[in-house]
Image (cartoon, rainbow, N blue to C red):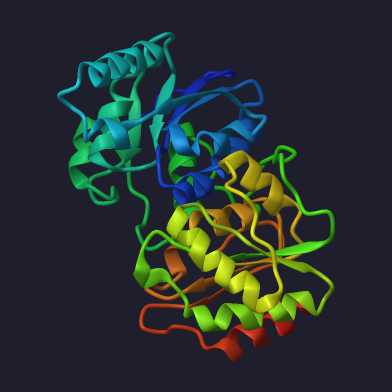
Length: 326
C-alpha cells in the first residue's frame, strides 16, 4: 500500500458520496472535520442530482457536482446519455485535486472517482461495501464495518488526512433555505412513507401519533414525495386533523423540517435530514436494526424498532413522552 503523503495546508478535496439521501446526510460531518484541521481546504462534492441540495446547504462545500447515473444507466445506448457523461467527466477534470475521497465504497463510486484528476482513496478490501472497489483506489484503509455510518465516514476521512480520529460530537453544518411553502402556525412533522414496503409502519398507528402531537398545540404535517405516497399522507392527515403540503423539492422540504417542533418518521432520508438539522427526531425502524444507521443529530434524537421488531403504538407514544416530553 502506498505510504501516506503529507496533506497540504489548503488541500483541494473531492468527496464522492452520490446516494442515497440518508447516506449523503450521514457523510456531511466530514466537511466540518476537514475544515477543523485544514480551515483553508477547498471541498467539492460529487452527488446524484436529486440529492444535490444537501451538500449545497453546507457553507463549507465550495462546489457541488451533480450526476444522473440512476437515470443514465437505463439509457446507456442514448447519444444524449453519452454527451451528459462526457460533460460530467470534463467537469470532474476541470482542476486537479489533492485527494479524491470515496466515502461510498462501491464499484460505481470508485469508477466515477477515478474520472477526477487526483489520487483516489477509500476503504480497503475488507472494509468496502463492494471489495472490488478497493482495487481502484490509490490507497485504502481499514475501518470496522460494524460502526454507525456517521462514525465510519469520519474515521475514513481522518485516516486519509493523517489526523487523529474524531471524538467530538459530529457537526452536520447544514443551513436549510427558507421554504417556498410553510404552515403559519407551530407544527410537527410525520414522515410515514419509505422507499420499501417492508419499512412501513402500520397506517392505523400514525393517526394516534398525530393526535398526540396535536395535543401539544402543534399542527400535524404529513409529508410525501410520490403520488402514491400523497394518498397515504392524506388519509393519515384526515385521521388526526393534520395538513398535507404540496409537492416540495428537497431544499423546500429541508426548510419545512428545520422549523418543526417535533419529527416522527420512518428510516428514510428526510427523517435523517431532520435530525441533521437539529430537530427533535424519532425514527421508527421496521425491517432492520438501527445500529448502523440510527437517527443521529445534534438535537434530541431516538430510534425504536428493528428487524422483526415492529414497534407497537404504545411503545412509540411512551418514547415520545419519556424522551421528548411530548
